[in-house]
Length: 230
Length: 149
Picture 1: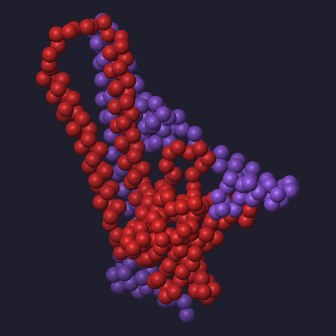
Picture 2 (picture 1 turned 90 degrees about the vertical axis):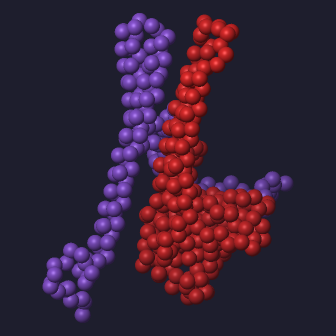
Picture 3 (picture 1 turned 120 degrees about the horizontal axis):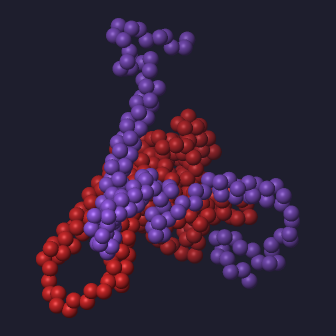
């Protein structure tokens, strides 16, 4: 989850988020250099003593400030498009989970396991145990096996919602009547938090997403337990 | 009257429990805050944009750029004695050196990450296939050890 007053991205947990962070650093360095160049040009313009009123045109500078921005845009666009298409790849997922948005909770269905489904409500502040995170904890977590490709099918039962987990690099709208698909792989076990990212009513800020990645044997034990309880 | 929405289950003043000292909870919370502060790496953001401490290759690129800028500008001034032009040359040196160092470092970084992923997959496959019939390192004709009886 995010640290207090955090400005940057959270550490990446999936390979896709690592690629996004890599691209973000690349784009930010280009943005920094352009900003430094603009600052320098402004300083030069303020401090120059030249005041030539007869400059009409200059082909050389026109060529430079047309070609250089085009090259800069290509340098940004190529990695961006590569990641865009990478995000659409769904490579043989081991598990499919349906995440349905409701007002104001998420429900998860593991249809690979016959009839495994449950609702995930936010834990109220007064019910939190010491050390738990306010407005982020849920009563039931979406448990997935670690290092396995997981496909998530996202939809909604009433209004628009959005299923987002920043550390996995996932944000997908939950649209009623539409099934959106995304996939992720968790690189390490842990608990990963997200929040609904599409305004959906009074309690839009109070329907968090909690993904728990566990080793496969623990996941199988959990599914057995959940099926027994159902 | 509480201004908190229903989902946060805000309580009015009358409903809230009177002050109770929750020592265990406070200690746990303080511990959590201390760990969080330790884990937080306050990076210095150049122009408020780039976190040079936590972005791989950023610090080296900026330092190389600064060095290249000073070197280029100084050399030009020593040769030509033109101040303003030397500043322009220094600035150009900064841009080129920073970009060059940045892309060189990021390219090597990317190659290392690819190798790291290949090694990770290799270790995983070795653990999964070791001792089985499809183990690629198994010597031809060798028998697989018997499983538990």
